[in-house]
Image: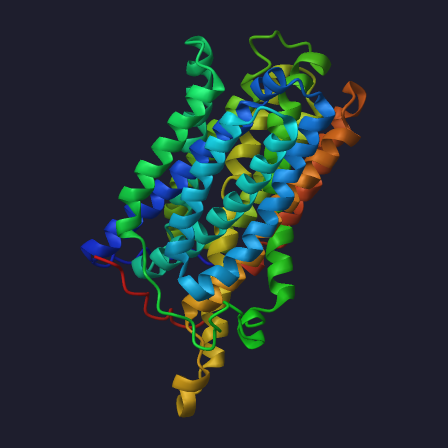
Length: 430
């Protein structure tokens, strides 16, 4: 049953400090996406420089996902003690330093340690950016989170292009990666001024321990359902980047020039869907947009699995990006709404100052947990890549991805908007 069509209300006035916060959060997403793409698309260069085989590289990439999941979980504790703004800036500084360390690594053990540290910072930044994004979205009173994810994807494209440029100019890693670190540091220094500053969480100890009642304020079952609904995106993202070109070349006899276009089509429509998702949500509601996105993603991935030739597969990749691109950002928006409801339930008029939980604090914990599913999906994508690595099994692999996308459509009703008024947003640092 779809949501009823809605009338778009006039856009509320947004103070300058909130607009500045949106710009800063957008910049953080773009910088993180750029650095992530640079780190991963340099994998062939790491192999050549350190003489590592494919097995070691696979372990490194999977290790990054595991450590990023740990960093995401840690971000909830850090945000409770320091506020998500400090976690974003501190995490981005950590990203810069670990990028620098990777650039100067001369043995694969030091390379692995540097990459693991990068994974911790990556997870912390990813989660805390979404914490910031949800707070900004509350301040706007309408959906804006998808635009942040679009900036992240666009930053990834920029990062991949910069790696290509460095290769054309024959710039070595010990020169290119320090430059990346410098860009991240400079961008962080600028964007940090506009991030949302949150009040301390009542009951958090000096060591940063979070009260059990706070950590459990959004039921784990709710987080798991939203995580399952968004799981198709990171798995499909991993598959499109890993399997796309080999599938088009080896199964559908595409030329070497056409083979990379599958991922290009996927990425282009993914960015487009995120750019327009917020306006779609305003018109049709989050549940309808997620249900439609999951359905389109399912059809697209089935088209890839059953494609008789590469033109149909390219259309399928484009449909997959268009549909699944909206699911992850709207899952975080839904988590923010569940946090709003949980915070409202926890506050009793008689003793609100003693027992009430701030909506920002509850949101931070929910986001830290939900973000772990991003890396769980990446690990699952790596496992599926191994399981369906042969040309004969590629079609079955894309059929499995279609089933995951269908789960997103089935669970769309769990993305409903909040049933209580949003709490006032946190103060924004001028």
